[in-house]
Structures are given as C-alpha cells and as structure tokens.
Image (cartoon, rainbow, N blue to C red; front, top):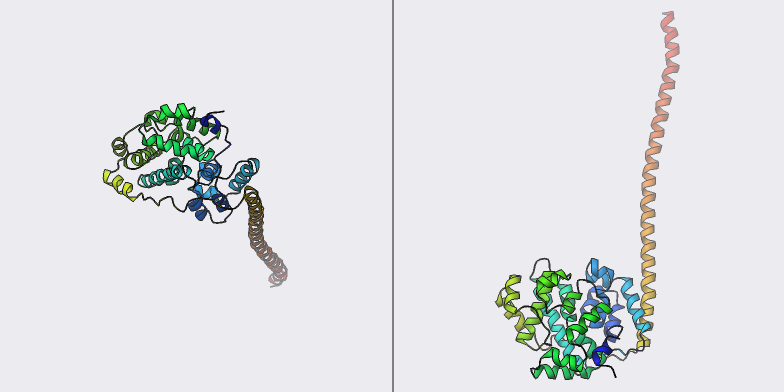
Amino acid sequence: MKAPGLAALEMPWIPPSAEALAALTRPQPASAWARMRHDPGCVLLLVRQPQAASGSFHDALGSLALLESAYRCLHDYSAMPLIDWRQEGAREVRAIAVRQAWLAAEIAARLPGCDPERAWAGGLLAPLGWLALAALEPSLGVEGLERINSNEFPAVWQRQIWGLDHTALARRLALAWRLPDWLVPLVGHLGLHVRIAGRLGADPQLFQAVQLAVALLQERRRGLALPVGASVVELTASLGLALETLDDLADAIGPTLSDGGPGHHPWTPAMLTELLHLALEQRRRADAVQRLEHDLDLLQQSLEQHCLEEKDRLQTLKLAAVAELAAGAGHEINNPLAVISGQA
C-alpha cells in the first residue's frame, strides 16, 4: 500500500466542489469569484489560465477557456468523487487555508503594486500538500491536525506517515500540476528567505505578503505548521507595515470567516458535466453572436465611411462640371466679343 503522500502525487488535481463548478457557469465573473475563491480545486484551474497570468482573475473568469478546462478535467477524471469540504478534517484544513488567503489579500491590499487576488491564491494554495491529502482522505487531515497540537516536529512525522514532508509534497504537486511560475515559490518555497526565493522566480513583495499571512496565522491562531523563512517581526519591518495593523487583521479573523464556502451538493459529476457542456455551448453561441455584432459594427462603420467618401466624390465631380461649364461658356462668349471688338 502506497504512503498517502505518494498516492497524492498521482492525483490529476484537487477535486472541486459541485457548487464552485456550478458557479463557473454563471455569466457574472465577479459573483463567480466570490463563490469559487474558497474552493482550492477551482482556484487551481483559474491560476493556470493564460488570462490569469497576463491580466486579472476576473478576465480569466469570463473566458471560454476556463469553462473548457473545467469541462475537460471533469470529463477526463469523472471517476474522481467531488469533494465535500464540510467533512471533518477537510473542513478545518480548508478553513485554515481560507484564513491564510484572507490575511494575504488584506496585507497585499496595503502594499503598493501587490496584487490581492494573487495573494489570495497564494495564501489559499500554500498548504497544497495538506489540501491534496484532505481531498484524498479527510481522515488524514484529522490525524495531521492532532499531531500538530501534540507539538511533534512536523517534517519528521510527515515523512514517517505521509512518505514525504509537506514542503516536498507541495513542491512536487506544483510542478506536476504545472502551476504558473509566480505561484510555485509560494507553494513550495515558503521556508526560504526572500533573497533565495527571488532567485527561484518569486516576486519578493508577494512572497513576503504570503509568508507574513502564514506566519501571523500560525502565531496568533491555529495553522498547519508550514515552514516560513522569516519571523512576523522581520516580515513586518521588511514590508513597511505597522504591528498595530497586523493586530487589527488578526483580530478580524473570525471563526465564521470560511462559512458559506463550497460544501456538499446533490449534483453528481455526470450532471455537472452536462451543465458545463450546456454552459460551454451557450458561451460559444454568445461569443459567436458577439463576433457577428462586431462584424456588423465594422460593416456599418465602413458603409458610413463609404457614404461620406462618395458624397465628397460627387461634390468634387459637381464642382469640376461647373468649372468646365464656366470655362466653355467663357470661351463661347469670348469669340463674339472678339469680333465685336475687332469691328469696333
């Protein structure tokens, strides 16, 4: 029997919840993000979209490519059960991940040039190994949280029970699932100093924002014993934040922060596959209509331009005709005048 960590490496992705997948079919990207950002499986789909790498998450949420990715994954891996994050073990692991995400986004919002959406994704997916194991078997989350409370060295018991410690598991999953370059250091290298992580492709400000969120949660509240390469004081000073700000943020994290996230839904994978298929067809038709409307707008503009150019051309022809008539009339009048002048 394989160790849980090695079995997790064979997962094609973290299964999403039915509610989060259904949210992708809705036409309003803003409301979809509010619903699906608590779901690790859907966020993993989102961050791998080209629009999320070059623009904002909202651009990716409104794209046809995201729906196609969700449909393809759900169709190709239909044997994987949809996860119910309300199960014991899975619920607490996800709740901690959501609290980290909220803290990271709030910290990023206070830093010029730091993207809160990316910080949310980084904070949520930083415990990627924990999330994968909780999705694989929720009881692993229960056992792991109990061991954290017993003050055992995390890496030691993780290697003994999981086969890999969390850092090694998360780093391997990040590479296997082809996470974007900006996200890999947040998942697999939080235990490093920012100078070293920067050489591995980390954005220093974003990296430290997520580090601070994880360290603050683990210091003030319950965390997942993730290794962090600097202390809260060092990170706060490096980012230029006040400790009072962190106190306010830590106090704002309530026990109900993650309530309302994805949970169990009676939809089956087959029903969701059909729903995504219908949404895809509808989105494709809507895109076709938009392209047609765009072509009609271009045609309208071309016709209006043509009418203006034709009007100018006709005006030019009229002026040329008048000029020719004037020249001919002048010539005809000039001949008798010349005779009269000669006779006079």
